[in-house]
Image (cartoon, rainbow, N blue to C red):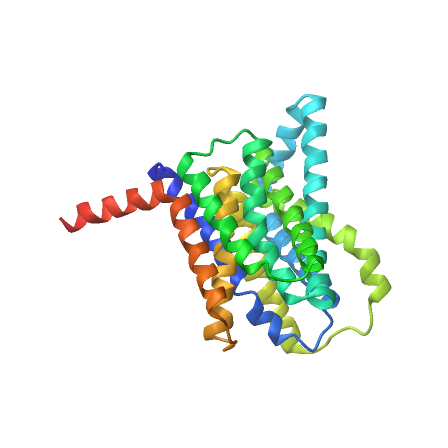
Length: 304
């Protein structure tokens, strides 16, 4: 991997690693319904994103609008439809994830982000004609073995995992295709779409307004640190990385979540889980071996 692409790699890795810590603030709000957390997460993220755009990125927004107007009708319609589809997919992914946590199992929700990288990598290979070297195919095979080891549960859990993973994989593939729009502006539009999609559910399920300052502090952290920043970083990384690479880097999510569960929440694990996650880490290293090798060579050169 070229050195100029390292920043995209770091952006992708940071985004997925951040999501691995998401369970910490969510546990702080365990007394609140999950749909309420989702509603205020989206609304707060929307408000912050558009305040930033209005204050600091108005010129970028004007440039994007002018760029869209300059495109022919077919390309403009294609971008708008793909943007709409991306907003629907990411919102459905959030909703399905929370539903799985509440009504299916935590295992199915966590397992989804192990299935997602395989679907994204294979989708990039089949749909976008992205090249996969033999060593990357080996990495995907290692990851698949890890998933088989952990998939010793119910068929219902597996189906929910595939649904959640498919929604997010589709979202990533669309982001790889839509390159004409500034990524932060794209995020703002997608949050508008998410808000419009969730408004009926918000009014239907809405109870009393939460006045607790602790709730809003945690929602603010979730909105900025676990929504806006990682979503923007993931969109930005797709400028310079193929979706297959971004897909494999999603494995940082379950790896970090695994470490958080052990060292922060002190949850018990078995040897089978440890072995499976070690295989996952190996798959990430093998898939990105070109970058790892170049960084090691650069470090060795500096030491010598």
